[in-house]
Length: 144
Image: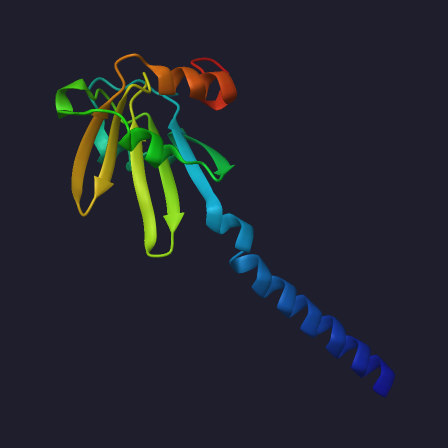
């Protein structure tokens, strides 16, 4: 009887410790979450950031390890908000103090980095970043 109780206790403790490890896997701390707005429904107006987040059924999600998108965007020239069309992509980049958020429109030429509650706009006139993303990840292609 003692042997059965001992084995039951070991199994229970093992299951509990494994479950705790699943909560915050170390590998996920370096992964950028990329969200693509899919347009499975029609929208008559520019839906903006609020509508992007209110329609989670429109989200396709990809995780990418060590994705340096924020650094690449910050190398682009800053611009005004007029060149940014719609919130089509969102990149959530984890770091020690929280998350950085970067948005891109469908062209992947116009970008927003949210910092301290403000939007900083960038524009890639040549579209080099878009070409690189579409060449390396089918997730960013127009049809996939």
